[in-house]
Structure formats: C-alpha cells, structure tokens
Image (cartoon, rainbow, N blue to C red; front, side):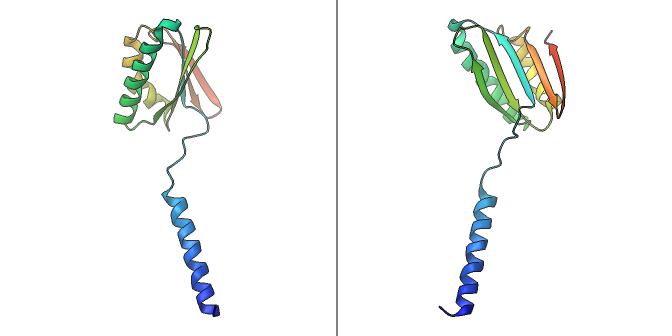
Length: 124
C-alpha cells in the first residue's frame, strides 16, 4: 500500500474512533447528588416500584438528572433511592412533592451532596 493510502487509512481510522467515542451516551456522575433513606416492609415493594416510576418521570420531565438505583435491604427495613444530576437543590425541588405525598417517604431522611459537603435533613 502506498504511503499516502496508509496515511489516509490511518486518518479515517482516527476519525471513526473519535466519532464513536463522541456518539456514546454520557455517563452519569460517579456519585449521587441526592439520596433518600426510607423505611419499608416487604409488602411495600409494589408501592416502591410505583414511587420509582413517578420520581423518574418527574426528574426526566424537569431535565434535572435521573433516578439511579434503588437499594432495598432484604430484611425489609431500609430502603435508599439514589438520584443523579448536576444540582441537588433542583432534584429536591422536583421530587419533594412526590416524596412528601408518599406514605413510604413522607418522613424520610434526605442527603444532598455538594461535592465534598453534604446536607442531611428529614422531610417534613
């Protein structure tokens, strides 16, 4: 293969690799911006799922980030909702009406992360 063809092939390969890297979806931040700690019973799993759907929809509609994983302990006591986004205050503004209206989270503990600083409070 002549040198100019090798150079063109190499440039095309680099452009293709760069294009594929740019086309990949953005990764969510490495740490959540907000966490909600709540108590539940094993019979509440369907309500937890409905709550997740409402929260995910509200966060997406407001373009505030995304609902991450939900952690529920198998003993049926502790649950955690993790939310990701650039602004923990915006996440709380968007989700607080839902959290306050749910029997599961109406009096739960919220932790918001502002980089190295956190703020934890109970929903009232």
